Image (cartoon, rainbow, N blue to C red; front, side):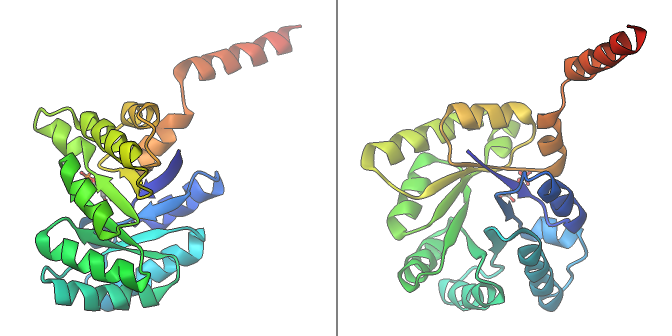
Length: 216
Ligand code: E4P
């Protein structure tokens, strides 16, 4: 399973990249606004800087809602850097835009997927990635991971090559469940990514080994 980092924070991306934990980056308008991108020039510049940091796919989301505008925006985003993957929301207009962009060879990450048939439709439209949002389903008392399992079953049934990015990950258990479900990718916030490395028994065990060694 590939690990993407779900952040627009350059320091977090750099720190995770140094540990070789970053197979890709996903951003969204909320994450970009949190790091001070207040206009399109700042946003595009920021996306370019992320691409230069990681040499891996970087998802950048359109802000338009009409398909023609999404397509025009996707062209501008794709020109920023060859690593850019355009994030398109799962709407009727979004689906139309995905179909056109996929035919043009632009990679699309269909985002805001909350039920399995949305993922199937996005794949049929040519999306390179689909992003089911797990944590937001858990938030409303639905088991988010069931969505991932259903998408994996459908994609395996038909040999669909669209990659499944488990998104809206909140904690390490989501990452474990994503791996058990056979998802292609989990996109993980920095804090949860670091939590994957640590275990209190590792720390206690290491401390004891070193103390015992000093005593001998
Ligand atoms: C995915 O690409 C999104 O950026 C992200 O995972 C959304 O997560 P949230 O529900 O924590 O906002």
